[in-house]
Image (cartoon, rainbow, N blue to C red; front, side, top):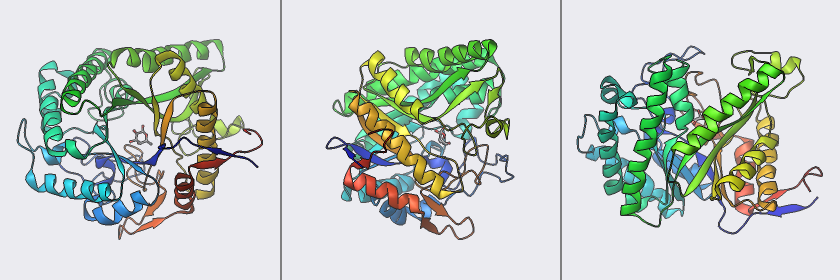
Length: 398
Ligand code: FCB
């Protein structure tokens, strides 16, 4: 069996976000009840395990993608950052820098301070100044330690889940609000881009886009898929400029029959059709290659896989599929795509938003009683790939 060697300096790492691993502060997801019956409060107590988590992060790559809790840092509009949290976060980042970890910071990942939500959140243009101020203070307090920036995580998914499909706070079903929010996020992205480049011209700035391969099994399904791609992918890419790179968050294909074939909303239907899946979506690894190639050809920008993972309790499935996905990255590089890194979702089991903590993507398991961390075999696999900077190719991909 032959191997593929990734380019020198390729980024390997894991991604997390504050709200999914830190104990909830006064943000707009605190107290949300998940589908599996838990209340978002305790997640993975990351704030009590900074040192131990830094060790785990450094043990499986050279990169860490993460976010800060805006609500914790800024308890009121335009308030100066809470110095206690600045020191704690800085110490954590310094620990990672000592371990030579590339820090990729996401400025906004799903949650907002409660005060921001109460003021109307992203629906109001007048509120953008509060995020601008947050960005300014992130730059002055942490900018020296950050190597690359993601302004918004999945702005397409966030706007749709919160304002169109009513699944996430503030649970709206309002196409007007959805369009406004998307526009405001894009404006905020541009504000942040300008600020970040002014402070650190050489540090790249991008977004992490939610990418889904939409396809249809019927005429109506094909129509739905093309509308979804237009709205979710093409329109978002048009709005979010400028970009130094594109972060690709990829998990799945979504087929429309015309109803979406997805394990979360229609359990059992994927299996009935003989389609592989995890606890959430259809498993379709070649979709990752397709997106990387498509974005490379269309936008000519450097690419990072900023999230990719598998929602399963069977770690051997995680191992096999992680290898498959990384082979798709190798295939993209062979095809000339400027792919600079692969960041796995996620370091440790956490609180999977509205689905809850029993939906697990971690390379490390977390005991919810003791918060004890235990690396899974997949952690070992990923560490080894990251360390050796190579993947064994299967016959299929050789
Ligand atoms: C992505 C989110 C991330 C996590 C994964 C499974 O859409 O960015 O926080 O929930 O899905």
